[in-house]
Length: 172
Image (cartoon, rainbow, N blue to C red; front, side, top):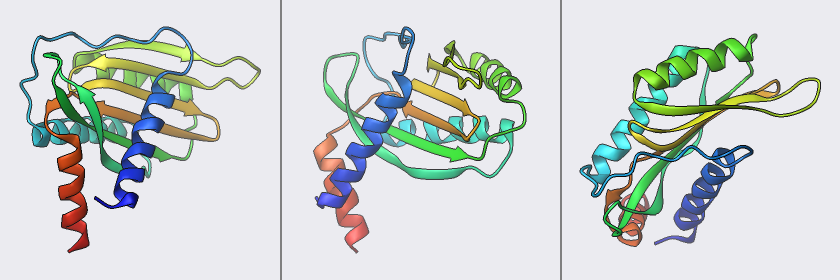
């Protein structure tokens, strides 16, 4: 496992936690007794979820990294892996309307949502949630730029082994 791969995974996981835990009461994901998703299925579902969300808003979204692996604990209490996707773009003309559009889309996909807003004269608005194909998801509509972070469901898997295999695959 390369230190770059481990560092990139750690940065993605930390960014997801920071972005989804800012202010307010966190939205709790639906509890399940066991995971029924494979690591590949979890990666595909969160990637598709992010793609649908960004397509709904339009614009030129750029990946910050990922999807990146993150360690997690399955509903059974076993070690597992989740995938974190972070994308951003320039701010839109109407952040409140964009939050409305994302909220509607996410609710249709089974995500429980909570809106938030910073203080000040030019507040940052956003929405976070959990459920559907995500354990956490956050859309921040900052006047300086938009960001969307999503973490997949936790799938059974060995994080260290998967990071090592990713490193081996990229090393060629």
